Length: 130
Image (tube, rainbow, N blue to C red; front, side, top):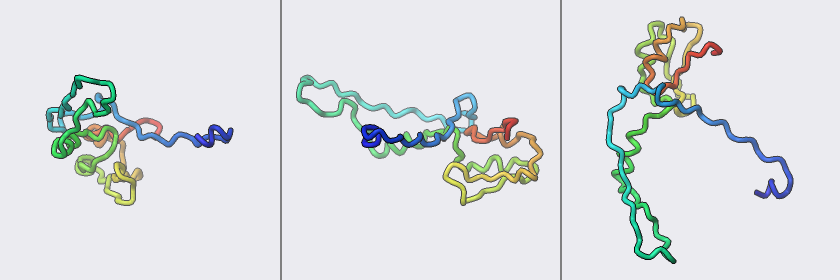
């Protein structure tokens, strides 16, 4: 806000991670689990009542809900691409940022697309411009 009021240039937006849409996910890879539901509280008197109307989930429910995450568009190291690559062109590289630990040796890759077909999160994109 200070930059805005001072008439100084605002910082650019941070790069966003591309989120894979549901069609790119391999939903059969993930175990279907029911979604945790939060209880809605309807107060009798609303004036001067600053309590939350949605009750928080219990800690165990929060953990269970987080386990439902399909990691849309990020690698969660299932190793499927590495296991199915016929050229051994994919390996783990711990120096990469979280969600991007798999590394492709493009000089070994023959472009068979098996890795992108097997990837449950849609992380591997075999677009023509890569």
